[in-house]
Amino acid sequence: MNKKRIVIFASGRGSNAAALYDAMQAGDIQGTLVAVICDHQNAQILKRAAEWQVPTVVIEMKDKETYHKEILKAVKSYHPDLICLAGYMRICDETLVNAYPNQIVNIHPALLPSFKGLHAQRQAIEAGVKISGCTVHFVGTGLDDGPIIIQAAVPVYDNDTEDTLSQRILKEEHKIYVKAVKAFCEDRLEMKGRQVIGINKEEKNDD
Ligand code: GRF
Image (cartoon, rainbow, N blue to C red; front, side, top):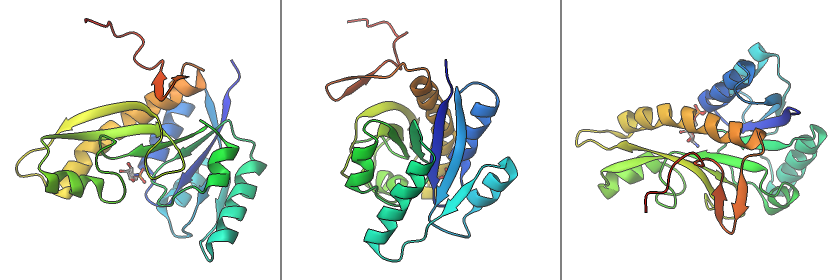
């Protein structure tokens, strides 16, 4: 099987990007990281990408229209099979989403469709839920609303802060993001309406 060409979009720390990169290097993901696109010139992800000797493109937002045009041009030049948003703090515009249907995935630190948007972990604590988690989903044109590929749950404890819950969720993010991208690269994901099937195939249906 040919390796998939993967472009990562990130804005900050890049721990999810690192989890994906490590899995590609280890041969667990049949993919090659061909570029990292970042919207902040001081983001930590750029240092990591330099260590990995992966090309980086920095495009900072000045005006919206130019930003989205430049992003599309940059990403197209790398001919990706898959775009992974990994802590990318912007919404992809419609032109990008339509150019790569079901080829853009995102990791979100909550069990979607609950707690979309920013500070999902804080939203979960404030709502008083006892279980939260993370979700990898295909990117649609709305906020955190595309078809769900995989989720993982974690408990929320009475004394959790946004920070402690975020740390617990992050460990699961790294695991499920690798699983989702691995499945994509092995052509195992299929759409059935809004359902994405293929990840939990091995599970028996007990009903
Ligand atoms: C993660 O919690 C991710 O779910 C959210 O932003 C955070 C990014 O962390 N979208 P990192 O940059 O991958 O370390």
